Length: 213
Image 1 (cartoon, rainbow, N blue to C red):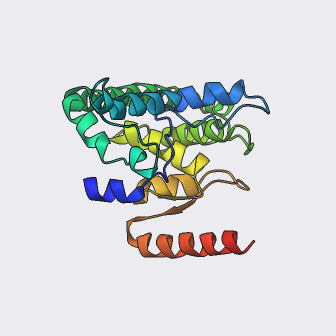
Image 2: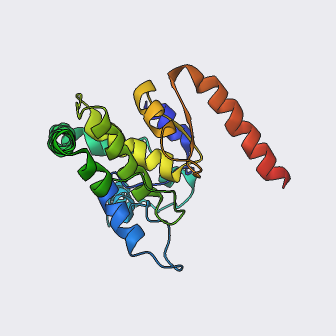
Image 3: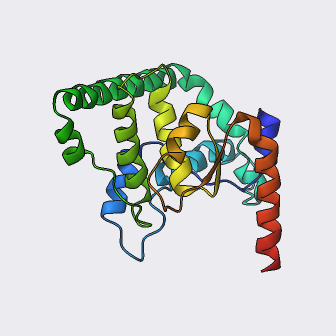
């Protein structure tokens, strides 16, 4: 895993995990702001972590080349936080289970309420995250509100990947849900587990086209 992450080099973007934070930025966005999906807090924490080895009087020179941004060091950073990370996964599951089951139960009692409170909204390029978030909640409610283990984090990943990437891979259930969102939209192309070779091919073709243009 460390070798794989290091080989990515500096070609990565620190994306937010919480869709709520991204949606808040979308609602308050202006033309001069950067992408609302970028996590400044992760960037700052990453730099602080890497620079710990460059303590005063260490004799080391800070080298802001590609090596500085190798992601393999994140494994050392995360290891002491395994317990808290695992707990955050459970917290997201519990939050999703509570929220979606409440929506589904209310919708069973009053189907009109679901259309009023969680209507299928059209795509807006400035509010990509909100488009996916709102419509995915509606889909989950229509499915009966049953949340499986890991769905809380998968929900966050599905929103960020589909809203702000060009290519993304999700498991079959979340791929189907994202592809069921209202169209037309400008979301990422989603690939399932059996389509990873095609994903790599499409990404290479996209890069060739971009270089040629």
